[in-house]
Image (tube, rainbow over all chains, first blue to last red; front, side, top):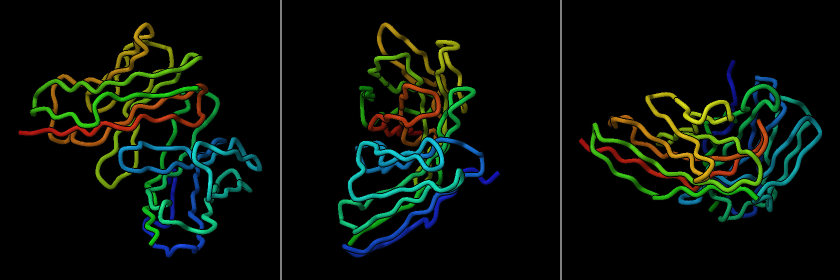
Length: 114
Length: 113
């Protein structure tokens, strides 16, 4: 199993540009989520999904869109990039039944907005 | 609402010394508690998890944590630090199995020889 994969690993955008961060998992997990990590802030939840076709906002959703058309994929879209969105983005997935359901994290995407 | 407080953003120890990283949580329901480790420029790796089965939880790399409900704490310990333990450590809580986590702000552990 590849686990949780994210592309790209690095990205530089100009203010106002849009882009999509890709996330995929091959563990058949129902739950997927996106976090951003900023120095001294820990990880903060952007959006999450409890299954295909169902998404909801987390703590810091502004400026981001998500969709979940399949169990495997959960892309994060930046509509109009701003310097405040410079961050490291992590995608995670988990099973919601059986065990503690710990989150499995992807390797991250480091995004810089100029 | 749930929250996590990690006391001390930086902890420095000598190689071979005890490691103690502090985590206090707030939760209105029995929590699921986790410790994750992040090495430089890498993703997050699960160290250990508490799921109400046992209050003393053993994880990977010699780490363990004890759940103390009366103190709402879940401190991470390791008897003898190794240079390879230098990393950032995150405590996290969730109210339901497999749902989104609320993270603390992290503690950077430095280990000197």
